[in-house]
Length: 302
Image (tube, rainbow, N blue to C red; front, top):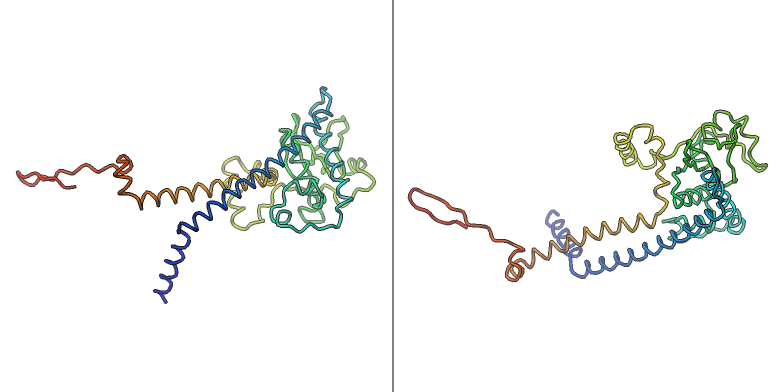
């Protein structure tokens, strides 16, 4: 049994390190790189166009920062509402939509309900270079019952709900934060639209589900806490930075490609040592002989 395992492992190793396998893997990775790059470029150009539209629609005034946020919110709601009516209850079961689920899918269909609105708005704010984070509201005791976006202004964070085109105003007219609404829901609930779901009562919020992947996510949070502190780690929104999925896949594929390239290059050096030493002597420099002294005799040992 032991010899069979060794033989099997050896044959598998030869298969995976054979020239044909490496050529296939190399071609597959190059094709994947091209695909991921083209999809990421397409998505980026779309959101660049949306960001350009928001800027054009925003007058240059003292409240330019607030106007940019609200115009982004209105555009997100307008795009999502129109598409939601068309694609409602229509499932698009494709590998790209189900496995990768890029923001372009949310932009086209809004099938992710409040999540789609939040991802579109967050991606748009990213393109406008406005710091933001995706917030998971606690509804009926469960986090993630409703998804929002919080954007950072000069005076602090403000809450935006793309699925209702909703923002809140303080008594002084400035935009309100999640905590403002949470601490005075009786005051702010008068500002919600007629079709609002009052289960979304701003009871609590989290920004990342650190328990989603056991062991891995808690370890990441631990390192993040050590690096930037507990408060920043608790308020860190992982999804905000993971919206450009094709860009992440592109970079991950480049990393894998480089690892395989280094493996192939190292193997080539090992199997062609003599040839390389003859034509490129600097590749494998010869070691200088050692002098071994024994009594009055002196001899060289390579």
